[in-house]
Length: 127
Image 1 (spheres, rainbow, N blue to C red):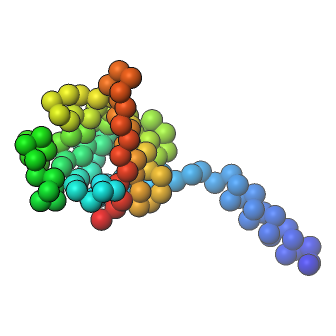
Image 2 (cartoon, rainbow, N blue to C red; image 1 turned 90 degrees about the vertical axis):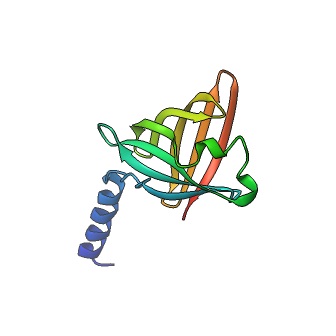
């Protein structure tokens, strides 16, 4: 390998190693892993906070517990805390949970919600 080729390869490797990690875009429509619900994630509020609205429920998920949340925000004002992480409040079942959204790839999202020592994790895929 010629010196110029080695130098170019080394320079490219160094550039890639020091390049900033770009955050994935969480906006769009997401479906729960079990396929029973879909959510529209948008930016809202100041500083690109995230909000998520329940927009669709599969027929067997249209229960007395779920229907009050249809077409309502279940996550409001989640604040970015890292490249692919947002922290905020999750509302469900008449309760508010502390939660975080984590983009694990461009097309997968994980929601963790906790109230006290009780926690739940849900996974979503982009629709």
